[in-house]
Amino acid sequence: MLSGATIEVNNLTKRYGNVEALRGVSFAVNEGEVFGLLGPNGAGKTSTVEILEGLRTPDSGSVSVCGLDPQASGEEFKYVIGAALQATALPDKMRVHEALDLFGSFYPQRRGTQELLGRFGLEEKRNAYYSQLSGGQKQRLALAMALVNNPRVVFLDEPTAGLDPQVRREIYDIIEELKKEKKTILLTTHYIEEAEKLCDRVAIVDHGKVIALGTPRELKQRSGAVTRISVRMAKPETNGALENLEGVTECRAEADDYLLYSTRVPRTIVALVKHLEEQNNELVSLEISAPSLEDIFLELTGRRLRD
Amino acid sequence: MSHVLSHTWALTVSRMRLAMRNRAFLFFSLVMPLAFLFIYAGIFGRGRAQAVPYLLAEVLALTVMGSFWGLSVQLVTFREQGILRRFRVTPVGASAMLASSLVSNYFLTLPTIAIEFFLSRSVFHMAGLGNVLSIFVLVTIGTVTFASLGLIVASVTNTMQETQVINQIIWFVFLFISGATVPFPFLPGAVQAVAVFLPATYLVSGLQRAMIDHTTLPNLGMYLASLGGCALIAFVVSAQLFRWEPESKAPRQAKLWAAAAVVPFLLLGIWETVNGDLRSHAMKNLQSIREPYTLERIEH
Image 1 (cartoon, helix red, strand yellow):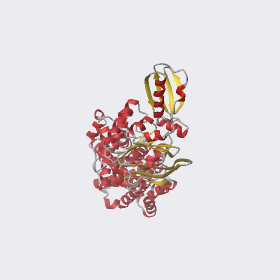
Image 2 (cartoon, rainbow over the protein chains, first blue to last red):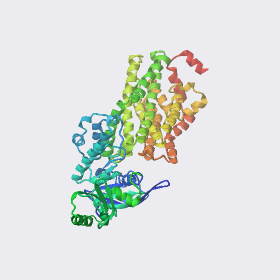
Image 3 (tube, rainbow over the protein chains, first blue to last red):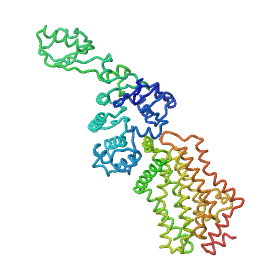
């Protein structure tokens, strides 16, 4: 465990009746880091983040946020965190600016309502009732409310779940901005691209356990998953020699391309170039697709994330 | 402490604003009490000015008791919809959340009370206003007491259906055996023996005495102390039992804790049964209507 980490989670367990939601979850998040908890529904992501927010108590294990115990630190703890819960609900007849004014009034230091409305693209909706907002607007309001106290640590539980791709990209932009502000962010998601795009480090969670942890690049490198190299050549290959190139585990012809699956990409490419020279052939195009976190999850669990 | 006060005030203002936008609230808190006034004074009192203080006291009591219903429903709705849990990740505590329920409800009740007085004077030509200070204090303490009882109901029930069932049961008891609809002297002896243990009975009787006899605060001390004690216990118990999460259930022992809120009225009921003068006051209040045929029927 990293000492001095902003968020520390040690050997967390939590049970709901017969269901073991968390089975010894541990990780640490450093100051200014965007840390992702990636896993399928029911993996234990929300239980973990709700324990960190102080909404639930663990059965065993410990957590600390900015050195504070969420259960014991009271207001001091609430001042340093901001949270967008998985399902934020407000009274239907509460106006957007009233929600920001009200929640801002609970903190000694706060961001201005006008600033937040502008930043989250809600200026035109400032007088709209909560019930009149679209799903994306509600989510943007939830993020604005999470930042109303300018917190050090922000918890975002499935911030883009159920939103269409365009709104999702808007939320990504907002999180990218928070990243530039050096906020420490703990994000839960079951979207691979979200974790890859936004997170400095990712913990893959399944059945209440962290099964892999690292930067998206480290996880891919550590993985035994193969990289796909798509090659197009001036003249077609006929002798099946591509399958024998160094590092290649499988070769398939697909329309005008050859798909090489390699475990040792640099050596495969060197061998491919040598082979083409020997055959007096030319390379027309070459595309490398690294294994995704989805491939890694599949490799680790034998299941796809959305199974 | 100052944070609790500032949070309470911010929530109070917000909740009053939300209530004013809620048509159901306006119906139950304004239209219905005024309808009661017109039915009581216009039909039961036959529009006679001398009957109005007695009947207005009943209408005031019904208005005050209505706090109990609205608050429990609102809090359970907030919990079921997950609105409360959003507040839980802020510095707002259970005390501020509950206190804002009481304060906003009180401020929203006062205009209805004022309109009831205004209409009693202007439409039904009621002669006096009774002892205004006693009425004001009874309305204030009564509103807090019944609202606190509503908070208790919200604390011990797990679903809206459960809340509605409990509310219906309590409301009907308050409505029909407290003297707020059927005058206390009309109730059978056995029902009267039960009624002396109800906070609603003392609210109705206290308001009638303040309206008709101009009874001063010191002479209502026992009633006020019981209402205040009940409010205090109910508030403390509801703060202890308060649940933010929709899925967290009330423990069984919570219902026993809730029963503690009725202890002041248990004591007052025993005292009243042994030494009390509630019945004689109730009879005297009813005589103020001066309907000979009615009084004859009761006296025989």
